[in-house]
Image 1 (cartoon, each protein chain N blue to C red):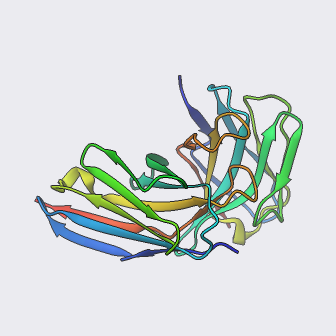
Image 2 (cartoon, helix red, strand yellow):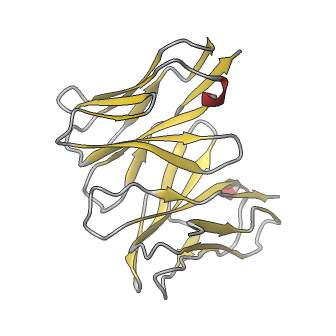
Length: 115
Length: 113
């Protein structure tokens, strides 16, 4: 298994540009989520999904959109990039919805800089 | 809102020392608590998961304990090695949102030879 994969690894955007961060998992996990990690702030939840077709907002959803058309993929879209969105983005997945025994698996991260 | 605090923020020790990392959380109504390791420029790797009904979990040189009533967890690392150098993150699953983890800011550990 490749686990959780993310692309790209690095990205530089100009203010106002849009882009999509890709996330995929091959473990048939129902739950997927996006976090951002900022210095001194810890990881904060952006959006999450408990299954295909179901998404919801986390702690810091503004400026981001998600969709979940398949179990495997959970892309994160930046609608109009702002310097405040400069961060490292992590995608995570975990096992069967409703289970509290599964650990979460994290992707390697996407380092985004918005100029 | 669940607040998770980790102390110390940074720790530097010589190889071979036993050490303890601390994590505290404000809301004791949790489902589980996880300890993660993060290497520079990398993602998070799960080390240990403790269910709310458990008191501790062990994996190799790592031992994590949980005291829900006092809102505390500790990660004990025995006989530390330079390869243990990384940032250690504590995260709690509060249960209000499935799979939603609340993270501390981490303890940056350096083990020198």
